[in-house]
Amino acid sequence: MAPTTRPTFRRSLALLAGAALLANVGFAGVSQAQSTPPTNGPASVADLAEGLLDAVVNISTSQNVKDDEGAGPAPRAPDGSPFQEFFNDFFNKQKGKPGSNHNVSSLGSGFVIDPQGLIVTNNHVIDGADDIEINFADGTKLKAKLIGTDTKTDLAVLKVEPKKPLKAVQFGDSSVMRIGDWVMAIGNPFGFGGSVTVGIISGRGRNINAGPYDNFIQTDAAINKGNSGGPLFNMKGEVIGINTAIISPSGGSIGIGFSVPAELAAGVVQQLREFGETRRGWLGVRIQPVTDDIADSLGLSSARGALVAGVIKGGPVDDGSIKAGDVILKFDGKPVNEMRDLPRVVAESPVGKAVDVVVLRDGKEQTVKVTLGRLEDSDQAAADSSENDGGVINPDPNENQDMDDQNDDQAHPTPDNKDKPAQPAPEVGDAKNILGLSLSALNADNRKSFGIAESVDGVLVSEVKPGSLADEKGLKAGDVIVEVAQEFMRSPETVVAKVQSLKQEGRRNAQMMIASANGDLRFVAVPME
Image 1 (tube, rainbow, N blue to C red):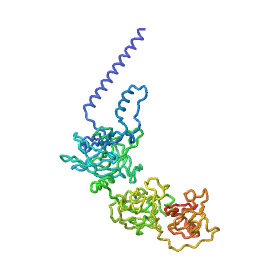
Image 2: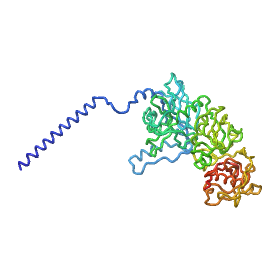
Image 3: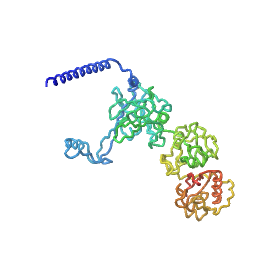
Image 4: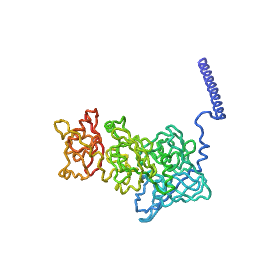
């Protein structure tokens, strides 16, 4: 036993000695690391944050609400919970008698843009508030009054009366920010004032269906409840966004936050400061997206721009400068890559400004000059267009769901090319049937049968073959074909002739301007194969 035990014991001692040696080396390494400043890792933002914290404020609001107006049942703790008695007692004390009032409080963030006391925040932070109080980093509390709000961009400007000039920050140029650039958010998440988080820009031009001018910056800098209205800074300390929304199943940050870009917010804030309201440009057109089929029918290399489906009577471009069927490709030097770009660039343009607009008309690019009206002045011209998206209204709810307004019962002008001579009909078997459509000339009888307004002119679709390509594109009996390939259609034979002509040219789709019974216009590209 002894010879066996001794080597085992010696091996154990050797292992212990080795472990001790490793331990000494390890602790020495830790000690050395702690005594040497780190040379790697991201640079500190402490100096940047220190100079900005005083300009970021906490906003607390209160609203007087009657207990019997919208007050739901008080929450209850689960039966048997150790806190059940405390929980129920607390909410019983909060609940007043029917008809009595109580205050509802909320917290948000904001930032000072003028040393004399102007503060920017989100509209939803102060919406409906009876009392607004601003809490500064040094503990000062001041009552604020509302200067102006804009619900479409969810922005608001407040004013306080400070005893001395405040620390203020300035808007930067958000248009130069790139995906991957570092940003810093400061705000009041969950009531923890002056919290700083850092991340990068994850995306640009995000549309989250929050309003007609969505163009959000997406960031992974932690944004939580209470950060609303707070600034998103670049690494120069300039405000390049206003933190507004998050996507989160739990209510906390999962790295998907959205900020209103400074390029949009700065103009709105300036108007609210100056006028107490927004004064947006108004173009007075109704638009729809340019689909791949429509792009092909127009000879566009790709689907881009905004297709004008109608012009509002009495609007800024009712002078013929822009016509139904035009595709707007550029507005005031800014490219219109997709339909939703146009409402934003129009709204951002000053009222009364003369701008150059590049349109595709009759297969050629043309530049026309238009003078913008004011959006708020358009109410009479577009009676039920309460949300007409910068004077740009979507005529067909099935075409695009991003636009807020879907209706416009204004009379539409007759196309300017109505008086063009009709092309002779080719020799075809049935001159009143094409692409699965049965066509008829408009007359008093079928106008009455389908309820078609007298202002509507063109060729009646009397029947649509089920399962045909025209049926798949949404055409239905009672629709009226006003134009095919931007040419006015006088008769069924004219429609057939134009479609045959397009086929001979090698076109795969026939672009048709379709009028509904009440005159609403839309464009449909019907495949001819």
